[in-house]
Image 1: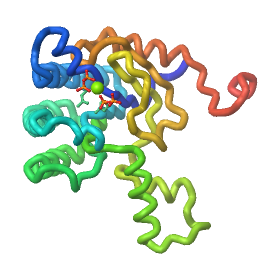
Image 2: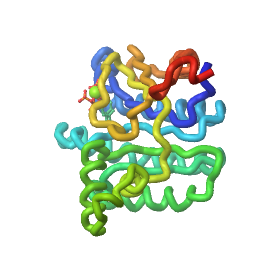
Image 3: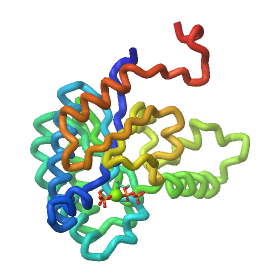
Length: 234
Ligand code: IPE
Ligand code: IPE
Ligand code: MG
């Protein structure tokens, strides 16, 4: 039996298909997805999980139609504004990983305000991954290490991580992906080295407390060996 995960990271997938199944626009799927995010955060806060990360927009997602991208960023803006009082009330710190240079000015401004405002909250860290790409995070870390004039022998794993978008974010223990897709899509590549995976067939807007429970039960039943033998774990 595992202890509960310290860090759950979620690849929220299937908003578009959820909407299509109902004859609705993709935007309506994204709107419904926001409710599921709110529920996830509440659920994890109640369970005392200290780190929750959601993959909200990948670097690759910039290739989507301009109207969908525009809608999503409006939604992020609205979400951050609307959730701020609840984040404060629940003592949750908002956090961000991704390429902030890509963010529209108003989003950056609102995000920065919410990050500052929640900076001292202690009960949970809720990280938004927006314009995130694992390969880019690794490349950017290399560039910054080189720019610092680091010598090859100085580049330890710990030092390398210090150049990541959030060096303080622990590795995810459990990565959940919804909608039946079973891939990482460039999420937390370096950090997922020893993550457990849970793939749910449910489309993201339908992911609720029941599905979270299934994921946590599955996680609890796994043996995390980290390269060791079962005997060594005893
Ligand atoms: C996930 O749902 C949300 C984002 C990637 C922003 P999708 O929009 O990918 O939904 P599907 O995969 O098309 O159903
Ligand atoms: C992954 O979903 C990215 C997010 C959930 C933000 P996608 O829907 O973009 O992934 P692919 O393209 O199917 O791999
Ligand atoms: Mg998708």
